[in-house]
Image 1 (cartoon, rainbow, N blue to C red):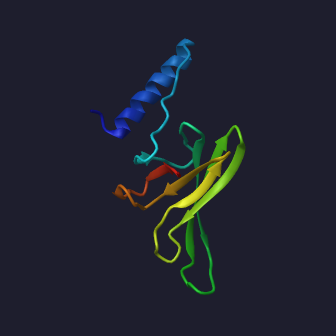
Image 2: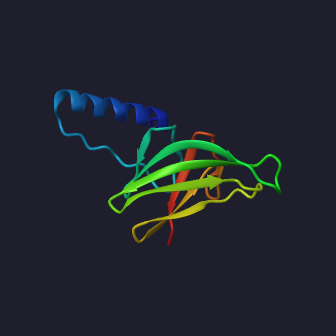
Length: 129
């Protein structure tokens, strides 16, 4: 079984080759409840939406001298576009909830309740019941 990075590279090669040769190409959607690699500006396709990492920003706070580091993502779907922001806040690392149409989802960075520690370039998207 190929590691996720190799799967992504293989999929991108097939996609590029398909465009060059004029063949229709179907891109496999990333799995929910699985670790998914991401990088700034690179769209990640899920079954219900496309997620694009926009970058990080620091927000100052009077109560916390170091402020907060916030990660922004753009969610694009037939229902429209929205920005979803995640932060560890004061250290309680938990998911950020968002909706696409009528469906609810959770975005996890740094640590997944189900999968444990995440690398800085990994995220987990889960469907909410």
